[in-house]
Image (cartoon, rainbow, N blue to C red; front, top):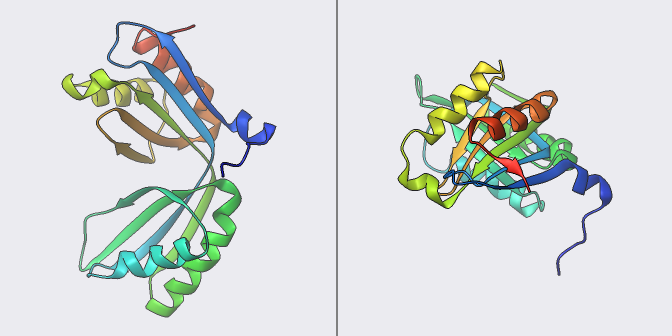
Length: 177
């Protein structure tokens, strides 16, 4: 059964649909995000399972996951969760980190996810570069990136969401319906 969103949750997530010939047909954002970074994780089989299985068992949904390239046999893993779940997730990961001797665990809850969406993107090279350039020109740092055939998402500081949405709409020639 699907739970009805509270008014606070509806305010934190927004999809701006537009009328356009652009391969990008929408810009969306989600302010209900937090990220956890685990530093100094041994790069070996089973580590991701050891981290994410307890989170799933605790009912915590993970959204974006990024694992860095291994250096000296160690890697960093960063992932996002709903903001209201970050402290619970952090405590679980901190316990795992102590048991497995990871270097550090930290979290940030001042982030948001901004995305561009469109089925035409998969056949048009340069869309991601255009998004990244737009954010850079607005002095918005990208903390994480996730892509699929129809969506490119970037984690940024929450305070820049409105600016990011405005600039992305302008760049891709999108106007609100």
